[in-house]
Image: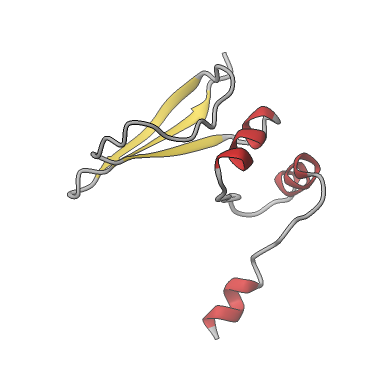
Length: 97
């Protein structure tokens, strides 16, 4: 039964990303959480759709990865949590000035 409840709060959007997100942001309610690959996140950043980032810093050097920022985005650290595993989650908002 819980599975159906969770599905009621999921929305799949196939139209213009910026228009869909901006419409959701105008509504009252809880935060919007989005998961996606590097190109999805990168296009969301370029469109100015992301208000807050949560970076998971894993204590393993992989040497390379996929780039999500294509331009300089000033960020402000608003939270940092360290876990026993060594992972640190840093929360940032977009710095407006």
